Length: 110
Figure 1 (tube, helix red, strand yellow):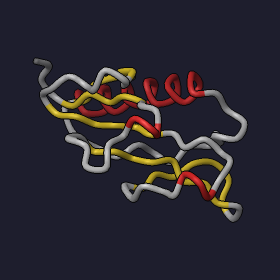
Figure 2 (cartoon, rainbow, N blue to C red):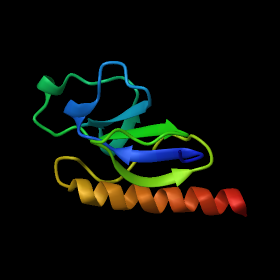
Figure 3 (cartoon, rainbow, N blue to C red):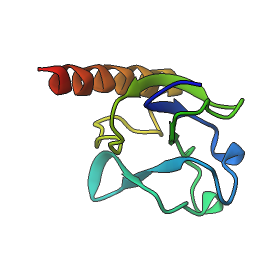
Figure 4 (cartoon, helix red, strand yellow):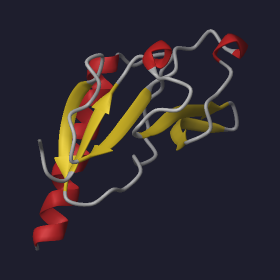
C-alpha cells in the first residue's frame, strides 16, 4: 500500500460510473484556451475531442488501466493547463502534471 495520494491518468472509457477514486475530467471551452477540470463526467458522444481523465486515489494503488504520474501528501485538483486535448498528446499531459506535482511537493516542504 502506498501512503498519500497517487495521481494517475486513465482512459475515459475505463472510468466506472462510481469510481473508488476522485476523477477529474478535462474540460475545454471555445471561450477559454487550454484545459480546466471538472468532477462532472462529460458526455463523451458530444465531442470528437478525446477526454483526458486524472484520477486521485488515497493510500491504495490505482486501477490497472491507470498510469501513475506522481504522488502528493495532500489532495489538490489538477491545475488549469495551457495545453489542449485536440492538439497535445497524453504523454505531454502526463509530463506537465508530473512537473506540477513536484512543484506542489516542493512548496509544501519549503
